[in-house]
Image (cartoon, rainbow, N blue to C red):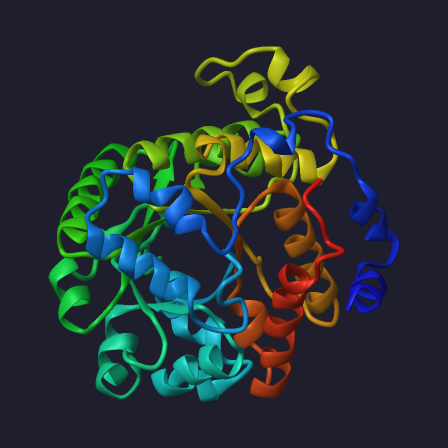
Length: 349
C-alpha cells in the first residue's frame, strides 16, 4: 500500500520522510490497540464511557488499531440540503448515509437527530452512532456563526448512540453560551455512558487578514486546549493551513517559542502542535477531511491522513469528499484514508 500512497501524494510524498524536530514523538500519548486501557482508564470517565469508546475502536477496517475513520453527514443543516446532496440525491435518504459508513468500513457514523432517528432500529446495532447535538442552520440573513441545540443527550441515549458530538465556534460572539450548553451536554452524556466529540472550530470574520487565521496552528491549538478542558473525549479540528494567528489578529496572549521551536512551516509540525494542545495526545485529535473539490479529492484526503497520522493524531472524519460521489467511489475514498493508518510504513514523525 505504501507505493499507492506515494503515488497519490505526488509531489507531497516528501511528507513520508519528514523528521519532526519540534515536539518529540516520545512525549506524545499515541493511538494504539491499548489506547483506552493505557490512557483513558486513568481518567474520571464512568466505566460505561470507556466501553462506548472501545466500541468505536473495535469497529470497521481500523478496528483494534487505536485509529478512527468516521463518516459525518450533518451538512444538510450546516450547508443546506441543496448544497450537500444535489450532486448525489441518493443521500437525501438517511439509510444511504448509514450504508455508506458501513460499506466504507468506518468506525462510526455521525449525523443529525433526524437522520439517525429515522433508521435507528435498523442500524444502531450494526455501526456505532454519534448524534450531532447542535448545528448552525445558516437559514438567517445576514449569516451568523452560531450553534443551536437541535437534540438532547437523552435523544442520543434512547436511540442507542455510543457518542454525541457538538460544535463550539471559538472566537465568535456566541462562544460563551455555546461553551455553557456543550459543557452541560457533555456532562450529561458521560453520566449516561456516552463518549463526547467536540467540533472545535475557530470562527470570527475578523480573523481573516492576509491569511485566514481561523485555520492557523496557534489559534486552532488553543481551541483544542479549551475543548479538552470541557472533557471532550475526542477533538475534531480542521487541518492547520498557516500559523501566527495570535500575533496577526492581536487576540489573547502567546509566546515567541511557539513559532521558533515548537512549530515549523511543515504541516506535520503544525498538526503536532494541535496534538500537543490535546494534552499531548491523551485526548485524540481527528482532523476534518475538508470540502469536496472534485478530481483531486482522493489525493487531498490521503495527504490529510498522512499528516494527521505522522503528527500523532487519531484519524480523520471525512464527509463531503465521500458522499458527494457515487457510493462505490465514496467507499474507495474512505478505504484510501484508512489504508494510511493500516500501513506500517507510514510512521510517526
